[in-house]
Length: 443
Ligand SMILES: Cc1ncc(COP(=O)(O)O)c(C=O)c1O
Image (cartoon, rainbow, N blue to C red; front, side, top):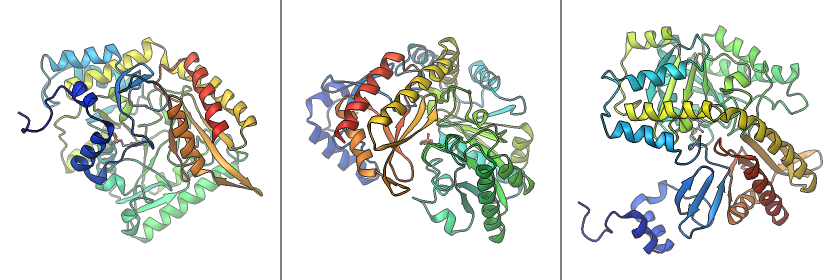
């Protein structure tokens, strides 16, 4: 029963009848300042299918941003899979249930054989938090290394890896940072110099942790280095640095929350695209196409070290409904050939965005691969690039007005993030390019 005075739960009708200002005021009262809205004009979607989102006024937006609906908004096979479990029995992983095992086995089949054990969570944050417990238990270490602008989630431990917005981890001496490796498209991205720079950064991070008596337990990295500005290193560029870490006992955690599940086109997993063999892989967001599901995949011996010291239970993590969603995502990915789609459409889109850069001087680089592209906007001052932060913000708002959703990332918040659902087709790419051209002309 809702308290008197609140609208009855027929959300669509009730919401449509209220003005947007009322909604914003209610939101502010109910949710407070901790939860922010996107865009200058708040956006109120009421329906979404495939790559299209419709707002409350009936305007349609091409979604080139959301990676959670990985195989498309409201994919009927994912919806049906979740509904079937919710309508029969949906308990937890402490009971036998073939749907959970079907999912774990299907996921393992996409991984190198050494990564043979699956643990289930509700989110990317939980997966990264669990990875930390596993790494500490297995290595005996207590220090973490992340990249300078890393984001890995929102728990106390995981948010401390983000030393820019949560400097506490670093202040307490147990988090050290290393700069993201150089992008493979940069002049020295593929060279020994690029690899040496990363190795040097790793050596300094290890030294800091050792001096603080926090030997490294784990290095967390997003293989696409999205929050570091979308920088995909060449295969092998991280090898020397990671070898150094391993010699000190640290484990490598590949955070696949953004690049995983074929998004990069050239590989199913980001770690494959950059030629790294991780000890622990973490997943979230795309995993359940919107149904909360996170995953840790690692070696059995690492889980055994953890089990010897502690225990793990997650009430909702990997429930039959969540596992069914995860299995449906894998199934659709393969039956609809979506990784190949990301590779082909993404390559053409990247080439066309580079072309656009010839006409719009603010576009100083186009990075990434498949369906994860970063379009950098900067002013050239002398030999330097100065982030065009205000222009980038204006660009995403203009694109929104023109009916296209894209995001913003990077240390200077000047990289437009193009990261559509995997069903994004050639015609969608053409629309995106046209609107991009228009928006850049007006910035
Ligand atoms: C790379 C990366 N890791 C982890 C997370 C945390 O995932 P969640 O918000 O599902 O906890 C995010 C979320 O943005 C992310 O981008």
